[in-house]
Image 1 (cartoon, rainbow, N blue to C red):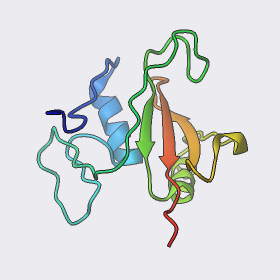
Image 2: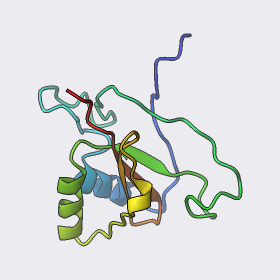
Image 3: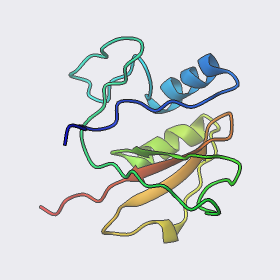
Length: 130
């Protein structure tokens, strides 16, 4: 297969510059960011990510997993969910957690929304057994 992975995520925004700044500030996501402190960002357009699992899954049109008026939900893989949630809450970003979302074989989850109301699922995969 010639496909190697996701090359980008593009979506409409009322204020693209402000929304990009929000993602960079609160999540370290977007152009000019790097998930690896040892690898500098490539340029102002590229987010240098780390390899790992990614789910690519269409949902039923009438799914209630995220808002019916939105056609997508972003899921971000994180390494320290508790630390990120503390930072987000300190910045007055509402974070939702529910015990039923978590599973030892799948990981832990939380949900936030960006300033334009887009759902962002935060996913901390389970730590591999030593």
